[in-house]
Image (cartoon, rainbow, N blue to C red; front, side):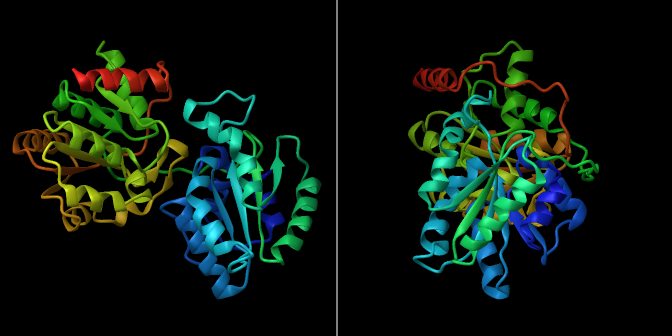
Length: 372
């Protein structure tokens, strides 16, 4: 099915969400159709955020909005769905479009397996009627499902299109780029050099994949690194938990701008606890690059000012390798919580691999290393 056909079938003129590689066709279609537009399309910080935003749109207009996301974001919508949207509360109608990662029987990464198993059940448990879009779903079948959905929407209920891998297509190209020059993989290599044998907690997506590839290329052990392959937005909190309980070790967190935005409240908790042994590096390319490159709002956000306001005693921004190396060494020597924002370009190697160890092996090796 063409993404533009699905948009026409929903009949909606306002979309908000968090980008997903499974929904790349829809995301690209939205960018070519609307771009980032306050009246028609807003990329939110997390899925709960966009659900509440869509609720506000309905309150103001009486129209039914569309919220798009990867199924990994279902956990973030459960609270607003149950305590805000539900017809026993405010009865706010909403259409969800959900990319189905980890669908049973389809090979996927470990962080998607269980989420994929419970995707449809979670929606059913939340009293949300679903329709699954596959490669062979016809336009007529989707339109008929939407007609059934309209009856439920008129009762203040919510509905969901669950989109299987490859079910949506969009033929027009979209280019995502910025003016920064530093490549993320090289940034990670510089961080690994500075960290030496210190533990590193890295965020989900290509950053963890590039850290894994860096260790492999250098024939270094992977025991130093905890790869947060799922749970987007939580790697800095994981790093905080490690740092507070291993005060004798210097802990590094490699984070991304989309992840920081997703659960920015964690920065306030980090600043309040201010562990002297934690260095928080935020690689900011202003994009959800791992899932296609759609923009985040981080390009217009002062990450350094936010960190300082949250209580980080040290926070700087760099846009060159010379400045990065200088600030990495300064952070190592000062023994205070530090944040380094690194301005990064959009792009990665086409042949970028994935971790060849399992998530369980990663955890066990990292814990053994911490215990040494």
